[in-house]
Length: 222
Image (cartoon, rainbow, N blue to C red):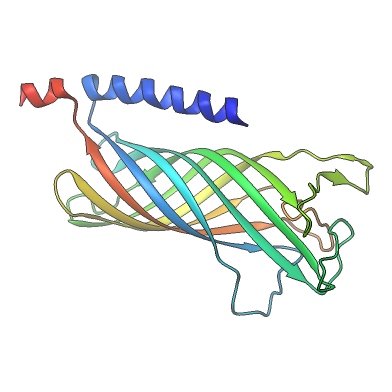
């Protein structure tokens, strides 16, 4: 996990340095997210969902006034408990099924800004990437075993993030964005449970501060 994140950060650093000299300035974003989960342990009729915090670091670059690319690296977690006993989830001291899953992700997303000349800009985007997840039970024991096939299941899976939101320019150097992201993740094992058919889902609402980076070389040219 750490080598993968290190490689991604290294590639981001190289691309940032190149773009500062040869293309439009890059924006670096720091994001704080609220994360909810829908899956085998979540009650569908419960209007109040557990919300966990997540963090992300993004690198954004314009291709033109409408299209922009975002490279996003982040981490988060979710926890859930239910009186519906799952086959692979240990029972917590209060007698209910419980799981806590930590996850890390990296994705590349193409964003579209349909109103590029406005100070407040709506956007939408679609991307692809990878997600690493690590479910644990109430005692902190890893839950990586697929009991149906009696083997460890893969905790690195592809993901397709779809996002929609709005971005506002505070100053020529600083912007603020708020966006909702649904991550399509083709696995039913984020919670290490396969009680019902269908994939698990992660919903994210992110507030992101974006800073436009201008190199000393460009500052001198201006």
